[in-house]
Length: 340
Image 1 (cartoon, rainbow, N blue to C red):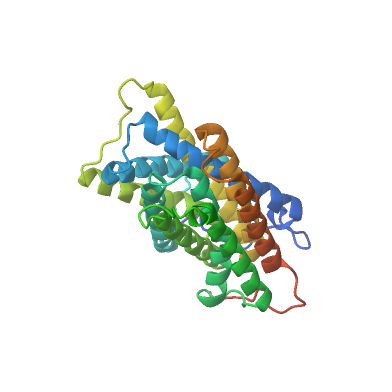
Image 2 (tube, rainbow, N blue to C red; image 1 turned 90 degrees about the vertical axis):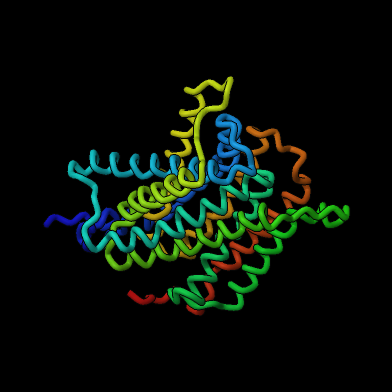
């Protein structure tokens, strides 16, 4: 039986002896991660625009879930179709790939985006994008204490503290004004979404180390997760259709773009994780809130949601934390080989 799961010699990230794969080089890593972060940053405003085009109310959880399911089915179909054409053979999992793809779908699609879609509908896109910055630090914490693929040093602990301080600073203006409006069903759900995303990144790294094709797993976990979410949303009474008076072509074009975002961004990110230590990839996560805040301000007009001075200070703390986490420390706290 022909398997699409690569061994080290057939992996898409494999290179000739003595030569680094492109994604393990600095230019390759920068291109892949910044490309993924730019796409993810555009998701914040585009999801909220999509809610408007499809007439989705923040209280209509079943339709929100069904909307997410349609998006990720499109994402998975794009990955499978594109890679089937590129490799000139069906891009389907071998028997050993199904369990990892299903487990990955629980965190990378079902839990992450169930929390994300519901939470984002109840808080500002700018605020959500800054909260998502904690993903970089959660990846490091989970890698050290749960997945055991790297050790935790004092520098990494300090960096994580700085990063979370930056996340909390987003709401400093509300605290000072006595009008703190953190909602467990808004910002709280966005944070849980971020935790699920960090878990999926570590799972992806583990599965790649075990010889699974990260792009294959990424594409098929979208198919599995999207199908589950669409079925659950529909069973709960969710219905996705363009709102009255809305141009249906524009609505479905946006839905297709949202599908493309996930297909392209996760494929790039998964391939980068397969070729590099998790911490080296996570350092680029701070660009998500940068792109997200800028694009939310431009596309949604959310220029008054976040005080510019606080936004700059928050992003400075997040960036400083990432630099501290990833600074070389003479061999201590370096990556070690985790369990297979």
